[in-house]
Amino acid sequence: MKKDRIVCGLDVGTTKICMMIARTHRDGGLELISTGYADSAGLHKGVVIDLDAAASSIRRAADEAEMKSELSVDWVIVGATGDHFQSFNSRGAIAIEGNRHEVTAEAMAQVIAAAQSVPISPDREVIHVLPQEFVLDDRGGIKNPVGLFGSQLDVNIHVVTCQSTLNQNLINAVNRAQMRVKKVVAQPLASAQAVLTRDEKDLGTAIIDIGGGTTDIAVFLGDAVHFTKVLPVGGAHFTRDLAIGLQTPLEDSERIKKEAGTVLTERIAAEEFVLVPGMGTRAARNVPRKVICGILRDRAVEILELVADQLRKGITSDSLIAGVVVTGGGSMLDGMVELSEEILGMPVRQGLPLGLRGLTEELSHPVYSTAVGLALFGAEEAGVLRKKPGKAGSTPWLFNRILSWAGN
Ligand SMILES: Nc1ncnc2c1ncn2[C@@H]1O[C@H](COP(=O)(O)OP(=O)(O)OP(=O)(O)O)[C@@H](O)[C@H]1O
Ligand SMILES: [Mg+2]
Image (cartoon, rainbow, N blue to C red; front, side, top):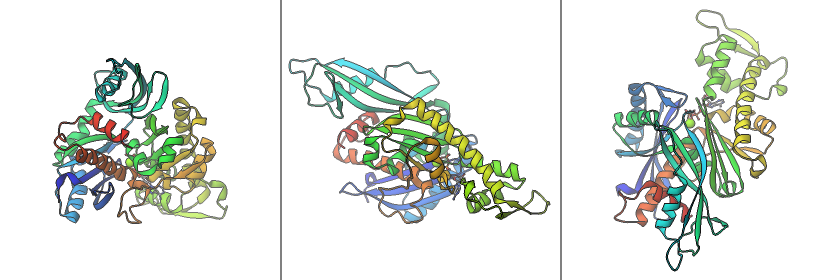
């Protein structure tokens, strides 16, 4: 089996680590070979806070995936998150020289570099530079200007940056787990890759990945990224709220949330009760389900209002023609889709990962959206490598992105 046909996505989530090993096919498809799963340790709100603990949970997930596939993983596409991620849009312009005024690949790279020449703080690094559209002599909506004639080329780009030290901590954790990092991908973009349809990305959609420690937002319009944001709140906050409000151990509040939880409190009958274990040696007691779910609803409303605030800042709501897609484990809480529609004032659907052959029913679940998306990112890169033999190792990532994007 040729090595460059194997891709590996590694989702380092706050609550779980998931590795997906997949094989690219000649027809452009991607097939799952094996998965590995481990509970996370050493992570808080998406960032590594204990290197050894994080590395050993990453290694556990990798061991499982490697054992099932009988492959050894050298490098991974890793998903990163945390509220240290920031993003901005920028525009650049260059004159197209030469007597024919033809846009070359070099000119395209130059105009993107010009758009990127915005000073960023020295403690931050650029993770993604994503072209939105090129404008050639005031004619917009161009995805690939190479070969076209014109006098002035402009580009609008979306740039995602993160704090260098926190990014390095994640890379170190993966290295300590005996793997190299080929590329770091912002988790909201990875989830979007697996969950959004082409039409949704084109017409205007926000993806909201409600994870364990973070809620990641990405907005797509015109088949391009216009806004990304990571909020440091997620499913673990629901669990903690229940543990505190009901005075019950975290393990029990997690179970109660999943088994009896809903944010649609108006649908709960007054006579519904849930047996809630006590903390330590305290006895269990029956608590009205309405009370339990009221706690969950309050937290859900708070998170969704934060999301609505961000969407108002990032875009005009009427640009989200295709509405909102929620994914991540937090979107599994009963009623989240309905409550999101109410608070965001837009149509909302739940997003399951797609685009990877061999995904079982168990893996077609919102908690796996990021891992599937990371494998898809890897395949996109591998596809470009096949098209450009001999240049694989040296082709800069940005250029890869442009080529694969232009070839869509
Ligand atoms: N059926 C369910 N009902 C309610 N919550 C659920 C359900 N299933 C999973 N969750 C919650 O989803 C969260 C985990 O989601 P996910 O696996 O997407 O997070 P993560 O990727 O580990 O974290 P992050 O992306 O924030 O770093 C947990 O808080 C878990 O309690
Ligand atoms: Mg996640």
